[in-house]
Image (cartoon, rainbow, N blue to C red; front, top):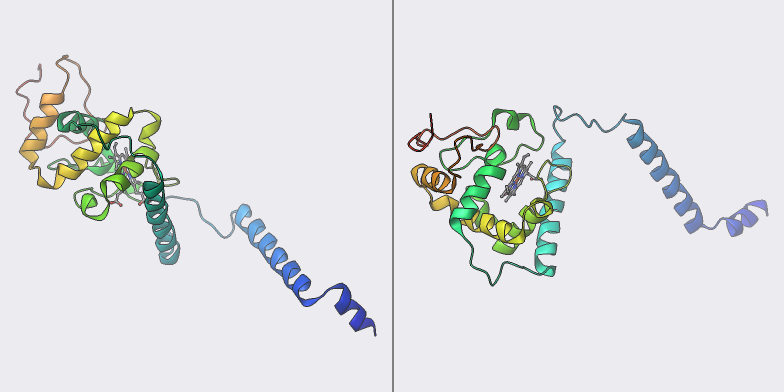
Length: 203
Ligand code: HEC
């Protein structure tokens, strides 16, 4: 009698939902307590977690690239401007032809990859979204927040050309793009390629 009243008051689906909510609450509390998720960059993600967030990132970029307008489609991109912006904004983390990444990059999680094969895995629209919007919780900045759309477009053109560029050509582009002031800064933390001679440097 009592059990049938209970069952009417709390039908199976309601009990199921209650249990699910309780479990989600306990999981949330454990997560926030810092007991089950280690946020230190020195401890690797589990293989499953790394796979899941990487796949989510790929799908998120593809989804936005398909949906959002591409302001660069009609304009002419400049390889020289792209090389200059890449040397300034990207080399420290991603390196380039003949240019190593900064040493501190190996302490990042995820470690920013070299981009020599990126253009074979991402379309132009996807690369544009990646660079423009950045990647949350990875250290990849949203360059669209600080660089004009045309610069992003130039950078993407440069990234697409990069596999074909030799270290000497990259060094030449960087040198050409370099402002002619005596104390012009180079990309912070970036290692100069050995071919980057001091021909025009003022020392
Ligand atoms: C502070 C370090 C940092 C800087 C500077 C940086 N990135 Fe990244 N970038 C990352 C990290 C970390 C990832 C990996 C993100 C992931 O896999 O979740 C990444 C990923 C990427 C990817 C995707 C790589 C792939 O093939 O999966 C591209 C393309 C990229 N960055 C381009 C750029 C460009 C272009 C610039 C300069 C405008 C730049 N990044 C500057 C840290 C950086």
